[in-house]
Length: 478
Image (cartoon, rainbow, N blue to C red; front, side):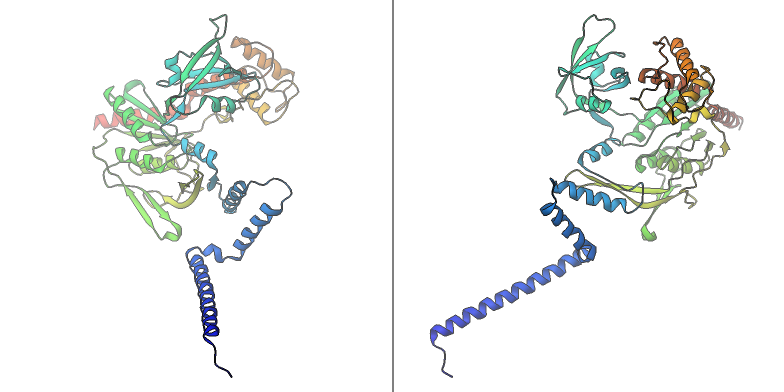
């Protein structure tokens, strides 16, 4: 064999170097794959390859138009849905914004409460401290146009969307007002609209009442302010109304418990997956609460409201009403870079004595049922019913009318001639057009009158007041 020439030797060296580079690259690629699979185990799942291949197949070959972003959101939605957990949800950007707004102490808009009547949008009220009130918008004004565009054919969601926007921007409302022969235009500068979750009132004989609608960012602060006002008015005992409170954030519920429960007493225990982590939250009370407490709960009191009710009940408060809903699990939520949100069940919570109330509920010390008419569902705001219609909502209408003494129920669930006459009777009583049609406006007034009746006759509230007065009297005698 003849020896290599210098040229051949150089060529061989180059070939070897290229071969080494290729092998090193392959090794690096393999190591990279291993490292990625180590850090992200899902990449090693055979099903993940199906997901990747399906995504590429759809994007490249589907006959119609494809939005890759929608495919990804759909995949995440499907992944969460496969958990079969109604409380774990994936929200896209706009859905995520709406979800997070529920827990904030304000939103940006004009601050009006609307009702719909025969396709017309009526200002039911303005929110105190919001831009609309300062701009001169009045209750019963009817919205004709927004920014010069008629609102005919719009939905309530459309109107809400049109009045929302960036803080400091302006929106022009054209309004029909009973006292004005011509529509008027009012320009409103969008701004912060406060969201309140707590209301309070002083009843007779030093009985204070605080209602918590849900638990949001500002709820604990609102509760403290309400309690302070009532104490300044001479409150001797407090009723906390948690009925129909669906829950919300856990932190404000624990903060309220800390105001009312002695320092270091257990409020709630939170237990994570496979009991790997457990946190016991205790009261951080700074000032002793000395007044007797009664708590109202019902079958619609859930989650954080159950945490508060159970904690107060374990520390001497009297629970009155019906057994609560029974939601003993905790969700966390995280917002991603694109503003989508994942809400995921990550833990269960237990009462101070370690009980898990999931699907069991918190039991009251004193059970008091509400009348059947108080349990009727709400009517949808943008639906009209007339003679010949039938269904569950017609049944609800009939029972509402019957509760208010406007007529008998002769054919349950069917909007017959008797139902029409009952509606006319109610409309005449309310000085509405007596056409016998359950329009949005008539439905609004019907539910308003029923709510007033429930408040006046509320047997649970009456029992809570009676029990609290006995506690106040007993405390005074001691």
